[in-house]
Length: 171
Image 1 (cartoon, rainbow, N blue to C red):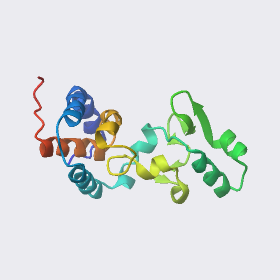
Image 2: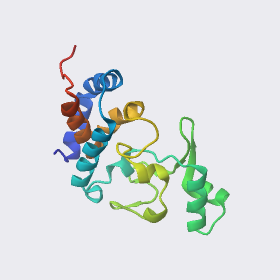
Image 3: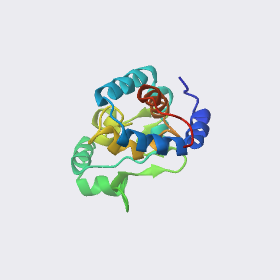
């Protein structure tokens, strides 16, 4: 199990092409999705997210309207005031949590989320290997980038490759 973030970044980038091929492999070959989810759960149990919190530093957190409403209620402010102070519009993702270039998510303090009990659904489900909408192959495009910063994603992809008999050759 690799958890060193420098190694994760280096290996994730190095295996980007291999992970693209693996994505196509999953779309083409039969596999038991339930088994892949079990593997992801096993990997997730072995990684302490509080020791890492890299997702909060690197990834954006997409906000659903209900996330915005819940967070605004938590802070006892209007939805509009919450959006002004804590959110921003992204061309690709819609509303996202505001980020500090140095620190990451506006709600990250050290390695802890200051709004953990009311965090957005995107954060609850992260890294979307076990939980997420659609099949695993339909979400694989997300995992290729996440394998460069999340120990759970990197290690899960490596275990899935073994489970599915994926050939690591370049062909």
